[in-house]
Length: 348
Image (cartoon, rainbow, N blue to C red; front, side):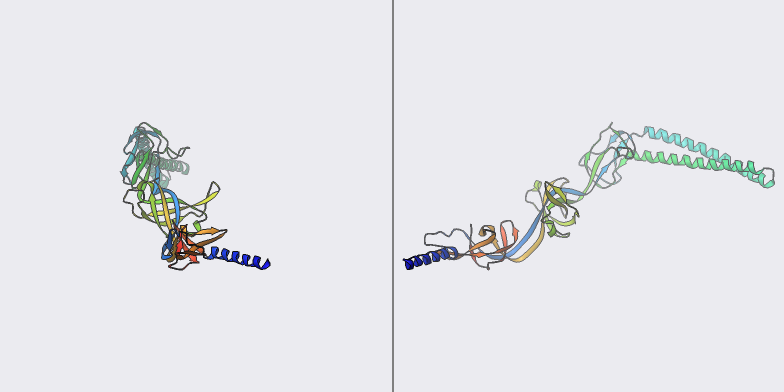
C-alpha cells in the first residue's frame, strides 16, 4: 500500500509541474499571441491645464472720472500707444487753464522781484541801503522764484493728467475683454481700491501651456524637454512645444501635490487662444531599441509580473517567465529583463 501511495504522489507532482511550466493539451486553444519586438518607446508625462499668453496686462486708468469713449472691443488687435479709452477731459482742461494763469501770475511777481533786487544791489553797494532792507528784497525775490517753480510743477502735473485721460495700449496684442462702457465712473490706480479695471490685453503671438504634473512624475521633468500639446478644440491635432519653466513649489489639491509646468508652444498659426483647455505630453525619456510587448501579455501572481511564452502551438505548450518592466507607453510596455527578441507570447 505504501508503494502504491508513493507512485500516486509522484504522478500528481509531475502533473503539477507540467501544468505550471508547460501547460497545454490537445483540446486547448492558444488564442491571440504577440511577438517580442525591438522598437522605440517613450516615457510620456502629462501636464493638464490651459493655454496662456506670454504676457497679459490688465489696464486701469491713471485718472478718475467718467468714461467718454471706448475705442475697442473684445477680439480687436491693437498696437502699443493706440488709444483705447477716453476719460472726460473738460474738468482737467479747466484746471489746467487755472494752473497756467497762476503760473503767469507767479512769473510776473518774480520779474518784479528780480528788478527790485537789481536796484537793491546797486544801492547796497553805494551804501545808501542798509543790510536789513537789502536782505528783505533778496528774500522776496527767492520766494517769487520758488513760487514760479511751484506753479510750473502744478501746471505740468495737470498736463500729465490730461494726457492720461486718453488711456493707451501698453503693449501690442489682442483685447481679451472690456469691463467698462461709455458713462461708467472709474477710479484711478492711486485710489484706495487700486483703480477700476478697464480692459485686458494679451500678447498672444507667444503662447504657453500652464499645466499641472503629479508630484510622483515631476522628478523626471526638466527644462528643455520636448512636448506635444493638444487642445480640446482641435481634437487630435498636435502642436510642438518645449518645457520652459518648472515651479519650485508645489500646490496641494485634494491631498495630492501638483507642480506647475510651462510648455512654450512653438507654432500655432494664431489658432490657439488664451484660456483654452489643453494637455501637454512631455517626452521625458526615449529608448530606441527597447524590447516591447503589448500590455495584455503581462499578468500578476502576487507581487511578481509574468509573461507566458509559447513553446508549441499544436499541441499548445507554454512556460511562464518572470519579467521586469520599464517604460509604459499607452498599451505598449518595455521589458527590461525576462524575455528575448522574437519570443511568441500568449495574450490575455
